[in-house]
Image (tube, rainbow, N blue to C red; front, top):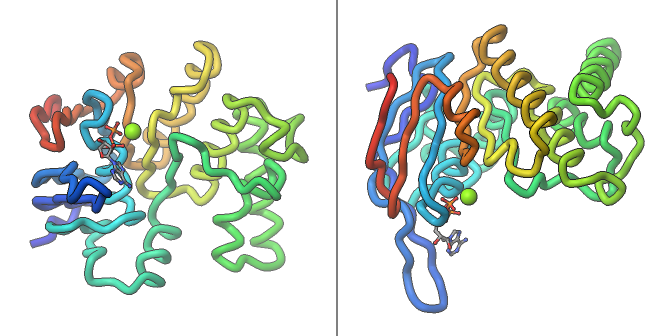
Length: 234
Ligand code: ADP
Ligand code: MG
């Protein structure tokens, strides 16, 4: 049964990858439910399955067994197109390695999720203003026309964050959002993420090794060897 206030329901999710050496099981029956507005830190050693679990929760990948429901819709029952629509309408995602489009400028990269919505006229102009304002917020107002290759790692990370924020997602997934940032920039980015949580009620799911960032989250899930071994702070 779907709890009305649950934005994310993960039930007994397993993921096995096919590798040259045979099947490799990296998630072994993870289950948890997130209420709208919660902030969750996903922590655990390298290789414990954090990135895999994040991708499954966001509908970027499909579980080998078990189910994921986002905003009350079970992703496994949807076509690829329908799943992409749920992702665009509901989620923002910040990848560990940014995944910016190399042939687009910083501003154009941030506009991609809005263009997928097919905005026209005044709505498109308002969206572009919002994208410019977000890039200025993360300190990149002077880099709008730069291509990813012309940006430092930390700058690319901030473009990726602006791209995830621009649709005002109901749930924001971030894989090590401060991992490539210096202390001062990490603090700005952390502030921005929690402002979104506070002001817009955005649910947060953050994979992180950053103790400061994890401490700000209301709840911590610890993964080890593909299993949830602790769930604290609800
Ligand atoms: P974490 O983010 O906690 O470091 P990951 O979810 O990235 O862990 O990876 C968990 C395990 O799954 C690792 O041992 C990794 O090598 C393996 N893995 C991840 N993606 C793939 C893939 N596409 N194919 C095969 N193995 C993978
Ligand atoms: Mg990872």
